[in-house]
Amino acid sequence: MKRSYLSPIRISLAIMFSIFVVASALCVRATRALPAENEPMVPLSRIGPPQSPELPATTSPARPDMVLRLRIYLDIRNKEAARKLTEDQQDVSSPSYRKWLKTGQFDEMFGPLQTSYDAIAAWLTSQGFTVNAIRRDRRDIEFTGTVAQADGAFQVQIMNMSDGQHYRTTSVPMIPERFQGVILGVIGLDNLLITSPQSSISTH
Image (cartoon, rainbow, N blue to C red; front, top):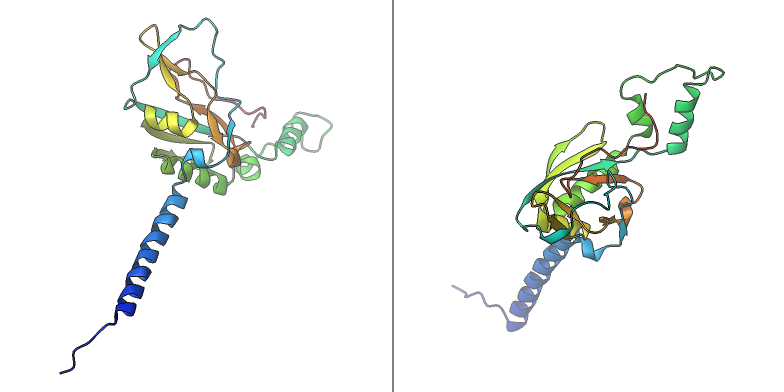
């Protein structure tokens, strides 16, 4: 019976190939979970109600493991066309006067794209958040995460306020540049007055 024999060169090549496969897998995994600091970020200009200068002062960072219930709102697309449609629907001289769209038509024409919605949900997941609710009209995404995750993902610091009851950020949240003009607002980074950020286009 012949004994199989592998030369040292073949053994070395096999080891090098195994290392290459593992390294490639790790690179793919790292690309899928790209941390916020590794991609261009821009400030989010609209995050809900303005913060009054008369608010109590901040005192100390919020507890890192405190769980936050958050929501991202997406803006509509083709704003000029949407604005013209809503104006024509109220203009007696327009052929579109009072020709209201059927349920779901506005979202099909002007709502956020599914690809944009999925990309934001994937980014939130890559930052450690749990996406809890997906809406059919793609207007918002509900998710939960800790203060530490929110601080890191949105590049803010959530601080306790001197009244001992409230918390808020001390700077404007940052979002990936690729979502500029798509994300309308982020709610839940503070527990002050909560309102939904509104697009400038009225829907009928």
